[in-house]
Amino acid sequence: IDCCQQLTSHEIKVLQIVLVWVIILSTTSLIPVEKEEMKFIVGVAVNINLIFFYAAPLSTIATVIRTKNSASIHFWTMAMNTSNAFFWCVYSLAIQDYYILIPNGLGFVFGLLQVALYQCFPRSEVIEGTDSVTELSGDEGDCTEQLTRSHYGNVAESEII
Image (tube, rainbow, N blue to C red; front, top):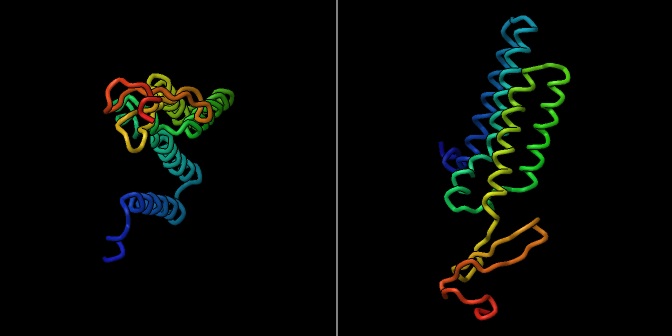
């Protein structure tokens, strides 16, 4: 089909996820099953979906380790996912519900892994037009620039400009 050739790989994956959810919800709605079985099937599917949600930002781990640069980790997404997983873990322990604890516990561990990578490998950006790397320390708004390498050799930044 010509329309499918125009879709990006990301769009195809989104359509596949939607198709899986349509199948799960249609199956549990149309096939006569007990309400508890339906809740279990949908609950397991939601938990699997949640694990993929929490693990999605981890796709940059190889990039971060290879480049020793955490620029591909979005700070606010990392912070919110880790916080969200932590609070759901606390809630699940309070009500003793392990169906909530397991995927959110994994999400919290994945978040801590991202935090560790973010701390171990400082964020740095390539300055356009040169072969130099600018290291950013602190928050995204509070940057101190340090020229770490340049194709001009070890010269000060003021000598290049």
